[in-house]
Image (tube, rainbow over all chains, first blue to last red; front, side, top):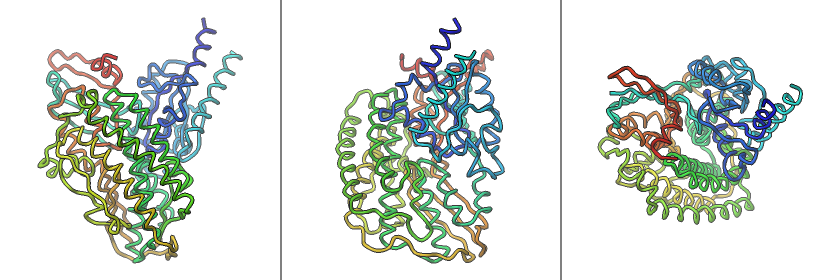
Amino acid sequence: MTKALSWARVKSPWLIHFNTGGCNGCDIELVAALTPRFDVERFGILLEGSPRHADILAVTGPVTLQVKDRLLRIYEQMPEPKYVVAIGTCAVSGAPFKDCYNVYGGVDKVLPVDVYIPGCPPKPEAIIDGIVKLIQKIKGEESRG
Amino acid sequence: MIKVPFGPQHPALKEPENFTFEIDGDIVVAVKPRIGYNHRGIEKAFEQRTYIQNLYLAERICGICSDAHTTCYTQAVESLLGVEAPPRARYIRVIVAELERIHSHSLWLGIAAHEIGFDTLFFYYWRDREVVMDLLESISGNRVHYAMNTIGGVRRDISPEKVSMIKKGLDFLEERMKRYIEMMKTDQTVLKRTEGVGVLKRRDAIDLCAVGPTLRASGVKNDVRADDPYAAYDEIPFNVVTHDGGDVLSRILVRCEEILESIEITRYALDHMPEGMTRVRVPMAVPPGETVSRVEAPRGELIHYAKSNGTARPERYKVRSPTLGNIPALCKMLIGCHVADIPIILAGIDPCFACMDRMTFIDLRNGDEWVWTMQELRRRYRND
């Protein structure tokens, strides 16, 4: 049963996207990755609206103080096992908003992150590459566990 | 009376924002916006960085209208310095600004199609949008943050080979856009969901200080490019597109026709671009003074205010983005609409936030409370 579940998980990683105060640049690139030119659906990736249906939390933005509680709540609502991808330099390290008074400066300050995708913003190709790397990571875990 | 919180997390796009709707049956009677999920403290950060560093910060205020923000910023600093960008640079600014408008409007048209449940059209728009993204990438080297503007001009020139490449791309976009306009005007799926929805009357639009395509869709001829020309707009002939409907359909048509207008402006600018240098050298320290700079961003009038105290860093910097100007008008147009129309009306102003994922419904009569996701709401009203 577990084997069947993990096999299905690797074939259809569903994403949920949350912007934590970024400039929108990464968000439009993430959506562009879903559209015909790049088409991530060929990897079984689907953008899902509800955290309860999602396997991967794709976070953009440097995490503002006001949005932090929401981010944690969305993370807590996701079923196990769950993975977090930090998309863009803001989500990776907070730059260029690193010293601003209202940001935490990076998703890993609040959540455990599995894959970092740097770039301002990363191109859709880079986002796809990052997510495929995450899929390989999940595969590796499954063959070990 | 039912209270419906909306947001702050939305699956498809953009920034977090929260709205509370009071609902009587299926009709919205009151709207309370709650903004600030995206507050990063950029204005304070402006004061701690030098003018050159701020150029990159200004770009990152918004990823969709990044060029509008840097144009506005460089204009403000240039006016403090008393320098003017060379003529070729001003034309290049126009070209990049108009290509950005094409990309931003086609992005929005895709989102609007998605919100009315027409996902096929959403994918068509976004597929064609990649053409203009390629053009921007070939000019500037990046798809989103172009980093074209600098204080005193632009950082990259447009070579003759690129000019012919851009023209080719524009021809393709023009042909596609004409077809889409025809379709939007006649397709029953689009008309049924947008005609007479979210009406903003001309008088209200003016009173509530709406800006950009939202204002022009209510029949008000107002465009910073025409009213207070910057860059090379005073030398380029173009029409300000308006529609009188004031509904979502008018907002769609205004943006579609603005794309055609932008294509014409870009063509004219490419043909009439003067020769010469693309930037002038400017001093590092800025003399004391204050200034206001205005730009027509894809979403409407963008205002930057800068105050200098003679050092290498600004003393105060203020940004008024077009979405903020449209929020009072948005609240007005939402009142009296159906719950099912909330997404498309919210998306109708092309907000630089859009968060309509989770909704809590509270029935005040018996205290019941339940949560709907945007998906469930769509499913309920669209039967998909």
